[in-house]
Length: 263
Image 1 (cartoon, rainbow, N blue to C red):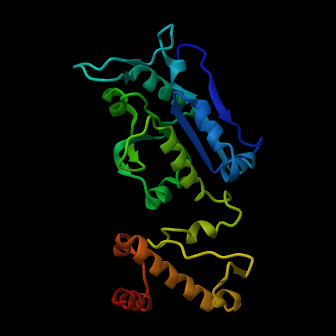
Image 2: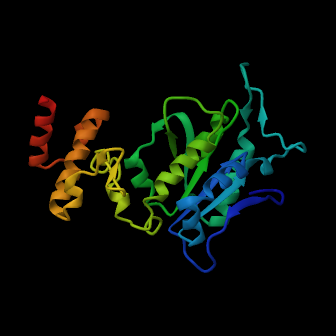
Image 3: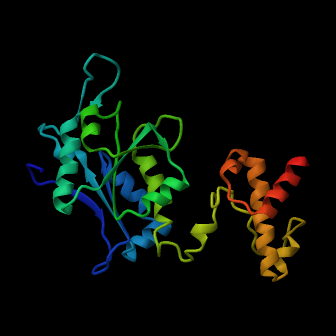
């Protein structure tokens, strides 16, 4: 529990509406995440009450009169480490308010690399907590006490966990029913069936001498579907052949892939 009045920063859900997903971001920089997420598709979904996002300022849970939340590491070394108390207390206070202990995702390059499959699993949750470290990281005892998932967006180091959290929230939110105007689009984008998305075209029909493929102008939906699947297979082979090992292909598509590999 918090021993003092603490501020939380919210992007409020629409009054009287039940959200499809509630995000809670434990961070030292609440303005950074809220300003970044309060735009475009995610912003509109919050206005409709489909999503809610609350940023909890870990610094508000500091017992230090100067609001310090970090200290030098035991054993020496460069940089500072976030103390366990403010981190754990911010989470425990949230749990008390919610009446439950939601899943906690810690943003770290040591975690499992985030992908579409993980996003699909997380989109089934009702509440998700994102823990954003800073400096040289968070005291291990806090992680052992509250973290359920260690996740990364790639094999590189950032200054904090806020940007990875925003990336994951954007990806997960697209899979929450009602967030996209056309929910079907979430199912046919890149990485559906472990394939990259097919090329997209719009007006004009001819641009700089380049024409839209004739099949897309034909109005023949079955042929368009076949063409798009083949283009997805071709693009995946060219750009991300590693994905094809787990791709879901029909026998005809398997034959098409074999022909492509011979070219």
